[in-house]
Amino acid sequence: MEFKQEFIEKLTNAKRIVFFTGAGISVESGISTFRGKDGIWNKLKPEELANFNAFLKNPDMVWEWYQHRRQIIHEAKPNPGHIAIAEFQNYFEDVTVVTQNIDNLHRRAGSKKIFELHGNIERNYCIDCGTFYNSPDLDISKGVPKCKNCGGLIRPDVVWFGEMLPQDEYNSGEKAAESSDICFVVGTSAVVYPAVYIPMTAKQSGAYLVEINIDTTEFSRYADYSILGEAGKILPLILEEIKKIRKG
Ligand code: BV8
Ligand code: ZN
Image (tube, rainbow, N blue to C red):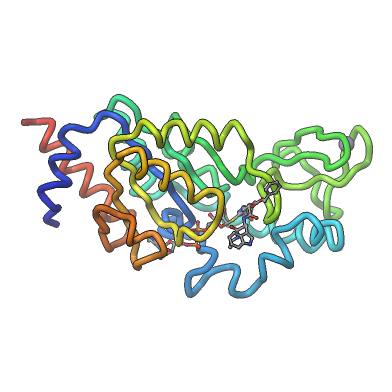
């Protein structure tokens, strides 16, 4: 695949890289997207599931849905896209992953600097006393688990619609975006706020914005370079390009 000369130049001079990722980067690991044709939201409405009132109204159903996704994520493995992003760390001064995903695959692929804007499905906490629980430690044989300390309901440590994002994760992601030379926007429909302010901040701070997606999105008009294709194929090709540049 031939990349634009301007992009090659940017790759040659860049020191600080940000990857802003969404559900699309995990598709090739077998995890369906939210809004694509096979998206999970198509069958289920976010209003009905990914919000706190839905959980209070029907904790077992919401818990069941996350358990189902946990199962899929457990069987999933990082794909060549996640792995290429981790390998970028060998070629640039600073590589930061700011992800909307809750599937832990960037960490499992070897990325070190990760900010999870929407939480992580492997972590849970009691809605009354805040005690944290890792997913494997939970007894889920009797529906939604109850807190050992106070008997409260335990929920996944993910950000639901209408909930604040974790401030320090967001602020750290924003700081990385402000000082990035290139910001890759990978596998996201870029419709969820305030997450999508991260790549916008990168753009406003002068970063070269590269979108990698199998489709055009809300974001395509902001991108300096839109590469159409699957993340698991495109990212390894970009890594090959970098190795050629570094060989000189
Ligand atoms: C908040 C965790 C307020 C849970 C998620 C109207 C207008 C604007 C905003 C709003 C509005 N109404 C409400 C809002 C706010 C709302 C929002 O943005 N709604 C949107 C949908 C309109 N935001 C919130 O509620 C946020 N909180 O605003 O709080 C507040 C303020 C102050 C004080 C108190 C409260 C919280 C949002 C977080 C919600 N949680 N997830 C869970 O996972 O169960 S969101 C969910 O969407 C996931 O995190 C997901 O990552 C995220 C974004 O989706 P994408 O990742 O982009 O996935 P999607 O399927 O959409 O797209 C996949 C893309 O991949 C596609 O483009 C596809 O083409 C591409 N693709 C597919 N295959 C590949 C590929 N690309 C490359 N390679 C491939 N192989
Ligand atoms: Zn408790």
